[in-house]
Amino acid sequence: MLKFIECEKFIENGVSRGKIEFFSGLNICLGEDNAENSIGKSTFLFAVDFCFGGDSYCSQKELLKEVGNHKINFCLEFDNEPYYFSRSTENSKEVSVCDEDFNITKKISDVDFKDFLLEKYNLAETGLSFRQAVTSFIRIFGKESSEIKNIVGVEGHNGGKTGILRNLIKLFEEYDEVKSLEEKSAAIQSEQNEFTSVEKSKIVKNGKIKNLSQLKESEIRVDQLKDELLQIAESNKIQTEIVDAQRAVQAAELEKQITVLKRNRTKLLNEKSILEANLGSETKIQKEDFEELKSFFPELNIPHIEEIQNFHNKIARILKKETEEELLKLEDKISVNEKNLIETTQELTELSVPVSIPKKVLEQYAAVSIQKNELEGQIVFYKNSKQISSRLKETKIELDGKKLSILKEIAAKINRKLEEFSGKVNDNDSPPCLNLNSSSSYSFYAPNDSGTGTAYVSMILYDLAILELTKLPFVIHDSVLFKNLSDSRVIKVFEEYENSRKQIFVSFDKKNSYGSDELKKTIEKHKVIELYAGGGELFGRSWAKKKNSN
Image 1: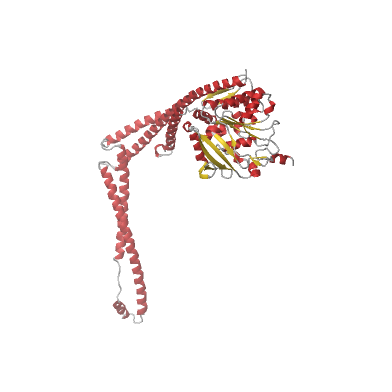
Image 2: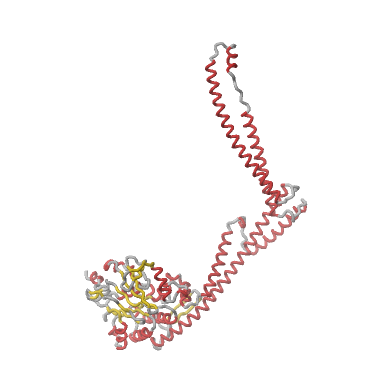
């Protein structure tokens, strides 16, 4: 339970309020008889929520602008053992663990802090997070949970009505069987998603069977293709037990590769022969040849001719080097090609397809086999897909049935408790009722009365019912819930509050307007803080009034 909170910014007439201590049951933040606003009643409840891991307190921009960043120290007690913490508006994602004097011993994340609360309040087995368990029952003005339409839960925060009902099942600790079926359904859904992705694969690339009529046509066509394969095998004396369809396809493909490799080998060897011939065709001219030539042409410029010849020799040497390099590259290609040819030939040999079967026959046999295999793949895909869809549908029906069965039992418990509370609070009025339309839909109403007061008292009674029937640790009710209630209802609601064994945090005003000494006694007994205008506001002043006066 929350034992106390303290904050240096909580001031009364210029003096710090010090520790604000709480009771194990009802705790009242009391306002004025004239129901004065802007004194901090709702803000105080947000501060309490802040100590339970809520974030609404530090999201109030006007408050932080006027008061500035500050921290709240608080103490929680479980099994008579106190735990001291501090949380700041400046870094609300961090919670300080403290000693009894609020010296910080370590810091933890707000997530770890909420997990601590989950464990200490024995809510871990529900499968809910701590905030999932409590948020719907924190009814502070400004929060969606305080709106009449959100009595059972805020759809936007819980994944719609389906999520609200799932959380209700968890809170009542009836989720195990539902979880098992949800996991089963999710696994089948994942299987179906995988099948859907196969639509883009080779198995169904040339068409997809969409209905039973196409399935029948495909099965007939497969039988025809099987007959074609038998005819090809018989007419060409192919032993099907030796050469099955798959090996025929592989053999035909390997035959194609071998043909290409042989052609490539011939081409490469021809290129090699040409390069080798070019290397061997070099002719050298000697100096004696120039002298002999001069005897016929006396005026011949021998040095000039020698210069030209030297240039030609240099070019020849460059071309020879390039030719030798090209020849080496070519020999590498020939080596790789030969290696691939040997390996591919070996693969064909290992298939044990008789060499006597002509290549064209293998290709024909392979083509028919491929068509047959594709159709068979489409048939298997269609049948398995339909089977998965059927399993998914059956599991969802089973899941919905189980959820509805559990929810009806939960609704019966809640409605019995609502009837009990209503009999004490509403006199002879019909009790509010949680009506389940399906496993994912519900309505909550008060028969024969659609007034605002009845709606709010129904909200209060619903929270008290859940508080008593589950491990929900507390509820928070703002004064807005009491505005339209009759005096007699308010008095009786507080009688039920006082009977609770769990913590209830309430803001309330106009205590002297109800003409009930018992109510006054209850309020005085359970009052933890009193707020009033003129220095008794939560922060010792009201900036709203100051702005309104300008």
